[in-house]
Image 1 (cartoon, each protein chain N blue to C red):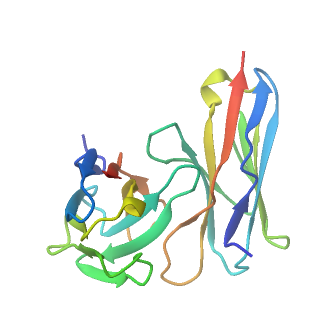
Image 2 (image 1 turned 30 degrees about the vertical axis):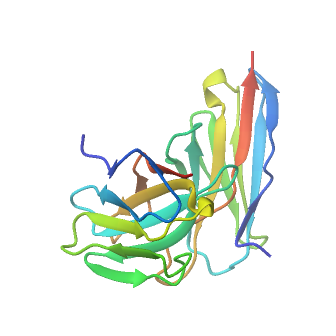
Length: 113
Length: 110
C-alpha cells in the first residue's frame, strides 16, 4: 500500500495521559499536514511541514499539542495531558510541493475518557 | 464570514435525481478549489478539482464563479453509492494549506 498510513487507527486514553500518533506520508511527497475532525465538522487544519521544516503551527489548538517530522519522512503528533475535548479524528495528509491536491490517511480516532 | 461555507444539509433525494451543492469562500485571492467526498467514518478523498472554465467528470459537474466567490457541484442521475458528505475545499493565497467547509451530507434513497 503506497498511500498515507497512520498509526494507531484507534486510541482510548484516560484524561491527563499523553498520546502520540504517527503518520507515514506517500514517499515522494514533501508536504505533510495534520488536521483534526470532530463529528459534523469538516477537517480543521492544525499544522504542516515541508520536508522537516514546520511552516505553520499557530493553528495548533494549545501548547499541549506538538508535532515533529525529524527526517522529513514520517511525522508524529503528540498531545500532552489529554482532555475530553481532545476526542476527535486526527487526520494526516500529504502532497507534492508543486501540487495542492492532498491525500489523506485513514486517521487516528482518539477517545479520552 | 467563515473562510468556506456550505449548506450542511442533509439532502435526501431519490435515485436518479439531480442534486446541486453550493459553497462560498471569503478570500477572493484563493487560488485552487476542490470537492472532496467523505464516507461515514472514513477519510476525505478527492472527488474533483474545480476550474474557472468549469469541468465535468461523468455525472459530476463542478463550476467556479470567482466574481461571486462561489463554487458548485452538480450530481446527475444520483446513485445509492453517491450517499456521502461532500466537502468544499479552498486553497487560500500564500503558503497556506487547504481549508475545508463543514461538508454537505447527501443521502440517496431507493
